Length: 259
Image (cartoon, rainbow, N blue to C red; front, side, top):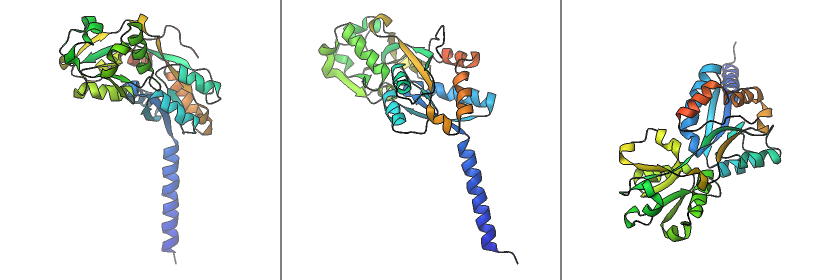
């Protein structure tokens, strides 16, 4: 006579094993907030080409770096700069030197009723209200915004207007909802299905801030089971297909990739 309980236990064990096996096949990629729309496009294209699924964990580059150092189970990290990936590599959390996969540019953007051709003067306009930037300690685009304000000797004059977002995505939310008159963000924001008819924007002269080189690093955690898949994605980032997606998402491309 068959044991119904034994059969149920076997079925349960099979389901758990199958679920664990399926979960283990997902590549975990930590992604800087500025690239949260970009990673969705890369995910779809990479999955179509390889069958490998990616789970994207989005946040400020600095916070993701801290999580990785504290043992977060991420296989690849796409930062908004090269400084954080280089820190990880120097401390043994990366398998090889990071490479640059995209070059970002800084803009000022919002629905304030001011002329942004001379955005430096516009910041003093009473109608602008609050000005958003991302936390410069954890968000590279926030650091670039702070550098630009310092370059034009504006920071002390507008300190009372500044609102700090936890990440560039929070700054983008402030801009889209009208919570601030203007905000410093990435040019790729304009490619994220934003209704540009309601917004004015101006590109910030690149001489006023350090070049925004966005780095990717293959993480040591990948050796625990997803190294082959992680390497495929890391190499995919330099492929013609990925570079085309990156370019069409509002980024510039590095002339020579660093590996």
